[in-house]
Image (cartoon, rainbow, N blue to C red):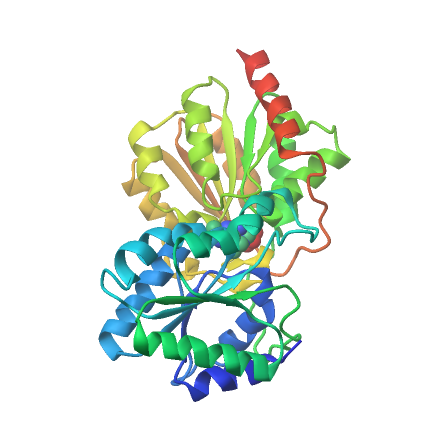
Length: 377
Ligand SMILES: Cc1ncc(C[n+]2csc(CCOP(=O)(O)OP(=O)(O)O)c2C)c(N)n1
């Protein structure tokens, strides 16, 4: 393992000081370092998704003739294929950009099922895309050697270059300025209160990361009614869109548990939900102002007015809550309202750890869920 300081020092020596991206747990320590050390010669722009991050780094290059560094999980690398091939590619605008990609689902390593396919195809995909890459070893000399190759490529044939990172590459970094917010409700409490308030036949969809794992834990320790839930363990940002068509095709209420990071990643979904406006659609955004599941890195939610955006997108009723009392009150009001409904719940950061994961195959959960849906009709 190497320290974040050492790693940044090497990049800094080559003027690689502009970072952007979406966090991955592989970069937990590095993200803490970047957040702590944001200053004139170290910028870190929090992007809404990986595709946007490539565009941000491209704009940076156009403006400065310098090279941006984009960090992401390999799941998000899929999103970047379009800007990499149609914007940065040496045969299009030829824009150099250094990608740092966390390798989840590496073959022969234990990882969650949603990472397996991308883990297996990450390197072949780079070969297909004709993007040069190196799997970095946590060794200073190796990193310097690989970086020299990348820099040579950037001068000769401007275009994207990828560094792949395995887990445990970076040593722990102790943050000086630990992020926090002023809210008291925890995500666990919120999910428990809402699930307990349901009648019996609501359809529940939950987003990627801790939120699905908390819904899973609640169901596991309660009536084991997993069949009423669709755990969207991968495809971050897609929970509300899955919920939209479930709502359009069912008479039952659909409750979507979303996270601020996931909502921001696919914020255009508000417009589709508003346009098709299913009256049985309830969007719960659990907003802790961070990507808690990957280590608590900040999102841009503090500058977004979700209530205003969803109202302007044709949601029919919304409420913003910060306390248990307000939550109970809004759940009560919601009973007699038509959707699309938004309940925005501000929650505490760093309130969750040691969560169980769904332990059967995703396909098995899907089959039980589809049976539940067909029994409802
Ligand atoms: C496309 C993609 N990019 C990145 C990730 C890694 N990832 C998993 S969960 C998560 C954070 C989700 O944040 P949020 O929706 O705010 O929920 P929270 O973790 O705070 O509960 C991230 C970045 C991913 N799964 N998919």
